[in-house]
Image 1 (tube, one colour):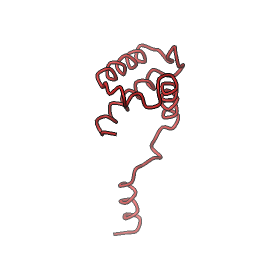
Image 2 (cartoon, one colour):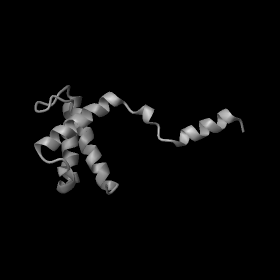
Image 3 (cartoon, helix red, strand yellow):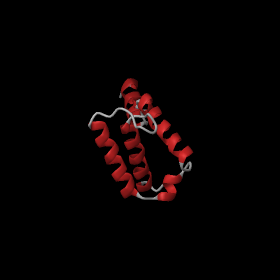
Length: 96
């Protein structure tokens, strides 16, 4: 096996952080920061209501699909809010 082939195989097994869309992730972190300051830093863990998160996620997705580009309260894109709700649900599933 060639050295290049071995290097490519190893690279494919590592997490590819260079694939992350950093601008979008920054928007999500802005929403998380806003929510943490408004409520409590880890209030979503205490709430533990995935049904509410799902409903909120779908409302934000719908707003974005209907053309909204910013949330009236935060000024951030509705999809960033939806992504936060999805992250909360995923974290609960992974038992964070």
